[in-house]
Image (cartoon, rainbow over all chains, first blue to last red; front, top):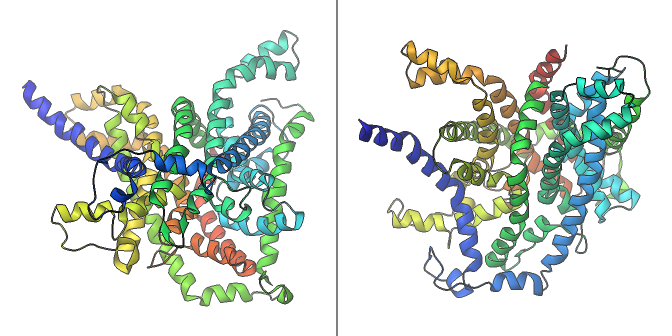
Length: 278
Length: 288
């Protein structure tokens, strides 16, 4: 009986899980293996599944040659940090107003923010390009930060509204009765409770701008280009430098992965309550 | 909810509204104006009002037609399989077994990987000469000679669709898993007592209980996948039958033909809005 159960569990749980996980993880495995293979082995006639010889040459080249990955990382960091600060501040205030006040125009504004999530990136990309060009902002970090708020603010407002609607009103009401004003109640009571949710939302915003490519490709030049553009630029006239590209890829995903693992639980709570309950 | 008249809510929403006004509203109006103009930055002298000419051109443009159908296939196959595999993964992760937390966390990595990198990673896997997929298939004797997956008509589109499926599995899995954990176990116990078997529980309890999450997640993914440029652009640049509307608009934009690109982008936005109407309705009926 017990053996039968184990067999059943193998076919209904472990085997399908292993197949899906293999599909999900293989590309990462392959990216890593490619990044540590010596060049002769990488472009040799035989495909090897584990490098015969480990080398971190590609990682060294990434930072010491004309690729200048460090500048790209710095640019990505600047853009992501500023996008996060701007979006998080604006969205938190707006989400608080939507969640706690009844006011004229509330529905229209909420609908506007929701609709914004539906806009095709390319619809905004083209006019923004021409506007940034006229304002002289093209090829600056600011042009990217502004462009990224087009999708980070609407989404964060909805995430944070989900979180806020789950916090009972009675908390602030108690504070108000105790003589606190609304601003103080927000800072002393809501913000601390909202803290982990703000972190989760911040991680989401950071991740989005760290990974963004479509705007970055058009709005940056050699000095201001971000990581995704730098990765793309490793594809040259003479083919692709796969060792450098994969090494750059591994470096790119490590920081966001770490942040994501800490934030994922809250993020999912917000996504399911914000997006589903409305 | 505070009902009394107060200036506070307006002050609180002001920053977000102001930013969105400047970076979304103004550009969209701008795009509308540009869509009625000949606005090609390579020919700045010809910039001027041309009425509906861009829209008429789009309806007669064979490449735009191909991109339209490409988008339908891309979204239907992409999101469809993302849902199926993501749901399967969510059901598996809802079981208890050792190491579940680790497996769950690790399975989410594609979601945090940049689209460019995803496109390029898979391009390397699919490579016609040194690609690992060709090598594996040869070793398994499933093929006799190497296939240039991304460089021929029949295989390029399925290949990029597999890539977008791979990217979207985690988001579905994550959202559906959260929903599954909210389904009370009482219902399953009651069903078991009544003699229900596995698939009956799935179709009569699980799916009805989480249908809202399925609906919302599906809709978000439809919109994201329809808008996705980076994966296709970095794998095939829309060649070999892999053109979608967003990639085509992006190419026209990159070529600085802004008037025509805006007209096509607006047609696309209208289509997405139609898809989104049930979602908007649901959100606001709940508000009442």
